[in-house]
Image (cartoon, rainbow over all chains, first blue to last red; front, side, top):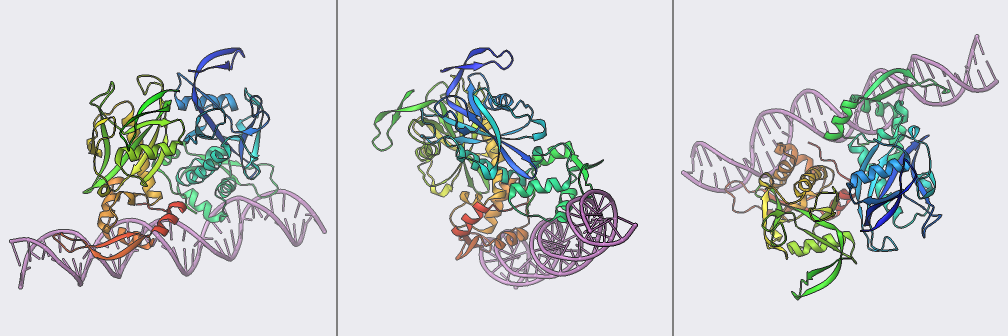
Length: 240
Length: 240
DNA sequence: TATACTTGTGGTCAAATAAACCATAAGTGA
DNA sequence: TCACTTATGGTTTATTTGACCACAAGTATA
């Protein structure tokens, strides 16, 4: 089993820990800002692909579960824990990685950008949000993984209320609709959207309104956590 | 990289081929018979778990993609190729495999039982169909993988017409309904089911009827391959 | 201050769909 | 012939959808 240099998060010291040598994790981290869906990419700061952009990822330690490895890596990469994270699938074309046979397990994460400060991870020289339409050519098969994630996201938001993980705690119905429009690539009717989403009783109307807008301020809403969980399990139907 | 004994399918000779040593594939193979959903399990013929039942699976070769490995293993295990096969996800608890750290990638397959002859695979002493309700305690985390697959199947049949892969080429509407009832664990209305499924234009009515039944014989149907593919991509909505 | 403009919010109406249920057809077996 | 079973094709009512309208409530500008 390979032993890889790992820098301890707290102390900054280099420690040694055994990792699995033919399996990695790569994360597709989605965010949403001003009507645009975005993905967090990192620029590699070392290795043969120095300078090129790719998905944030890393190695799995010998003693941790795959899910835990994904959570750990995501915390290291974004500084966030307890965010929405889901395994996508394993990607395993024999030639996907040039230095040997490595299978990667894709994860997909949805984060509230308001909670996140951009910063580069350990081995990354830079980290940046890219709009979906502006994704550059990425290393290895990362463009494929990203495409797959996007497809997955589109399916997922129609079957469970996971899209909400991309919005701030408090949001207007219009913002929620714009999120769905952006993810699904469709146009919706304000009025019908409002009727449909309110009927599910998923949202709690707050005693608060938008501020600093140059038009009539809209009411703010947040989720009802209980109904959210129930609908996440049961599945919900959000067709347009 | 580990070198593992592999018996060549055609010649029966033992050949050596390098395999990945910390990743396996396990397949959950569903079949449907006389109104019951079933799973194909194998009894291990060698190793520390000799005699115990588990999911059919195997090692990934150094030179093949993960998907190809799944197809190859399935052909070796069931004698069938070109059947419905889909990756589930990777299962990677650190202690799931007692002899070292091994992550397994789950696949799920749907087969027409009429096409399949039961036979044991290379390292298996026996292979047998089990009704979902009668699944015994399986090796490693295979019960977890099976539970996950079942959940996945339930979601999948509501979003794509994949359940059809479990039925014979020609079937009656009643048989199709029974399949859905069994998978989803619900009761349906004959009349409404018929209306709904026929409206999608997915089925082709044949000039043929059931035989050897002691009641009015029902018309047989088969799929329209073109519409089947279109609906598989686009997604279809089969809520009850 | 009046007016235009923008977005929010609450409706209407017709068409499509779903759920529950009924009636008859077409076959079997006694 | 009759009783019985399943197939098949309705009907009826409630619910949901989609398209569209009208006014409310604010801002920006003349």
